[in-house]
Length: 85
Image (cartoon, rainbow, N blue to C red):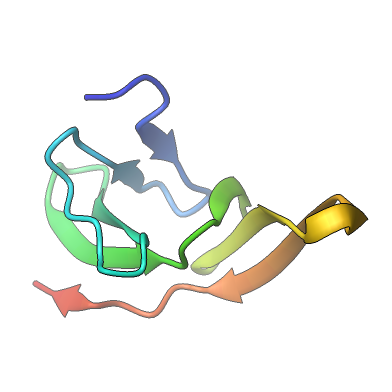
């Protein structure tokens, strides 16, 4: 695992990005999400250039990205599951 590659969310899940995680053609990352019983919940693809900044309740994720010369931006999004158990 990479440093910082495991992140707890506000819904009692753990987001895991392993060193062997798939990276899409556009540079997006895939996160495996497991619940507090250690069961796979879903896989989440983050947009290229986005970093997870924080989590909210009910599958809300805050992503940050560099917006050219304007500095850093934060966007709020909901998890859309790529793979379901």
